[in-house]
Length: 390
Ligand SMILES: *[C@@H]1O[C@H](CO)[C@@H](O)[C@H](O)[C@H]1NC(C)=O
Ligand SMILES: *[C@@H]1O[C@H](CO)[C@@H](O)[C@H](O)[C@H]1NC(C)=O
Ligand SMILES: *[C@@H]1O[C@H](CO)[C@@H](O)[C@H](O)[C@H]1NC(C)=O
Ligand SMILES: *[C@@H]1O[C@H](CO)[C@@H](O)[C@H](O)[C@H]1NC(C)=O
Ligand SMILES: *[C@@H]1O[C@H](CO)[C@@H](O)[C@H](O)[C@H]1NC(C)=O
Ligand SMILES: *[C@H]1O[C@H](CO)[C@@H](O)[C@H](O)[C@H]1NC(C)=O
Image: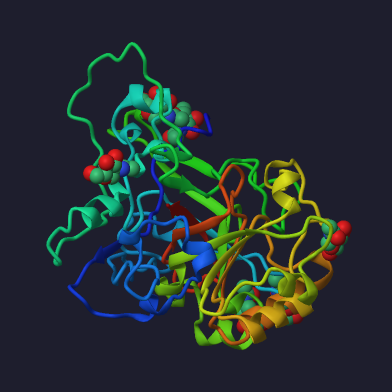
């Protein structure tokens, strides 16, 4: 089975609309002039703040229930608890058909030659996400801006002499950056030392007489680029239902700073202090030595990665307004403080942790970040797609 031939993937969709002049918590983001100097005046309001953007987020995704009734494969959907008794964190594994609940189809779903040529969900064009276009054109406030569920079935079957699937990280020479790692059998997850292995199984195949190809995805909830929910390290939160479906999309979407941290230390209180991240900044992506060492693409899980020490996490919580913490390896917490630093961050349930970001080749500075986890009911983590828009 050819792994790269992903058929389709569960996908979270959000519809972002632009009501005339309502304020929201996102509008309260304040970024100081040193970070906004490079921006044009259209990006800022009179107060020199980043233009409130997006103003309203509506989630149009169906929640993925255990035994989702939208699939015929009830027995195989839902989550498997792979937690050992006494573990300090809950870790789920997801196993769901690719076409479950709200999802997207890739051309290979019903066209053999597209499937064989590799037109999988990784090749879908992020131009459909072109928030900036509607924004610039001042389209009607009611306009539905972002629709990720697209019917991508091509109307022509022309024998393309050159069937080359596009795999893009940077759109429009630097306007949109995909900061998500691709999922493959080599994708790392904390609980598997050497990659997650075959994560796709072809359940129905055109080769076997089906009208379409149809795969099942099985992967640990904390694989590759992913998000942690409070239930990951707090038993009571897990039981009370603080899963990935409870995460605040306003925190996961909005103005964000990408910063470089010193390469010779883990992220301690002292390091946090030295970064001088101003009050008002709500979202920060921390690029570390992990990116230089290309740790996310190594064969084995490496415990010497850089992350937050407990005192660094505490300092961030006590002295900044940061609510979204992004980092470039599988854990925001350094291995030595794995549990304690996670618990500091997750305790208030206000801070969201996005881990395993792909931050190479992106300049430091101010962006709009858009991160959308899957809507997995009961899961304490989820794969997440994150992009930066300049
Ligand atoms: C955890 O412990 C309980 C009670 O001893 C046992 O029934 C259960 O199978 C254990 N579960 C795992 C995942 O080890
Ligand atoms: C977004 O829209 C603008 C304005 O129409 C266009 O110039 C630009 O190429 C589009 N960008 C993407 C990534 O589609
Ligand atoms: C297709 O058919 C072959 C032969 O019967 C079988 O071994 C294989 O598992 C089938 N594959 C799928 C995806 O149904
Ligand atoms: C997560 O932790 C809580 C407390 O131990 C437990 O009730 C729940 O079943 C755990 N979930 C898993 C994945 O074992
Ligand atoms: C960060 O901490 C880990 C242990 O958690 C250690 O192995 C690593 O060397 C530290 N990195 C730096 C740059 O100090
Ligand atoms: C999916 O369907 C196409 C058409 O039959 C086939 O070429 C392709 O190999 C199928 N995928 C697999 C892995 O069987």
